[in-house]
Image 1 (cartoon, rainbow, N blue to C red):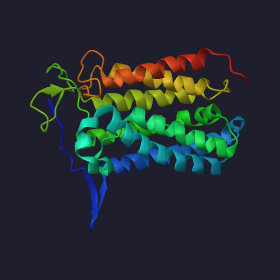
Image 2 (tube, rainbow, N blue to C red; image 1 turned 60 degrees about the vertical axis):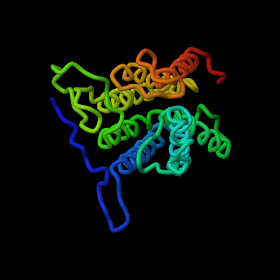
Image 3 (tube, one colour; image 1 turned 180 degrees about the vertical axis):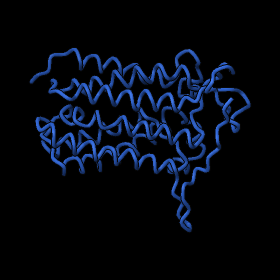
Image 4 (cartoon, rainbow, N blue to C red; image 1 turned 90 degrees about the vertical axis):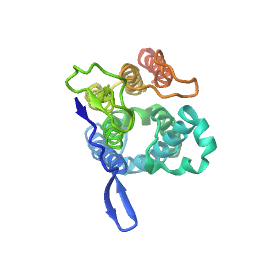
Length: 260
């Protein structure tokens, strides 16, 4: 069986400044967002976005991801812990960012930017949806480096079954890699293809919600479930509960007739 390498979470130490792998993964996601966004603005003018708009969207999006992701972790998954250790809420360099909370934070940020720029909410989210999955992939790689979000117990005969020594001696699924491949690379390919031609307003956003929600729902069967506000469940995990409304709303966006 493979053994988790127990990486040092600090990639580079510059005096008192510690550069962590987790932060570098987020930086990689933000760089991918900028590069792909400017390419999309240049080659798909029907979105009405400029290179400067992409810069502004990244700034708003970073705030939404960090604030929403952290609050999502605090409220959806570990409210008891953070109620007892409130100072830890601000220790984002240690990891602990919930995707669903980050998504809600980004929604709020995009709504604020859209109002400022005179664009509808779904015009904005349709533009950014294909830019997000590679950042999700980078984030899952960061989770693996940190030794977080390990998988459920696996058959020892599974060639890639992995022991996480800081957890227990049991073989487990390396679920961060599953999520990086599915919610990251696969979702990126699907959305990039789907958005290559002009779609009705809200359709690309809907495809993102359905795609991410469904892939996350499936991935949860290989990932050790989080306790969450509903308690620990191996039947329907907290991540699956949070994915169900995403899938439902995404299908509604895909099947509705856009107003314009």
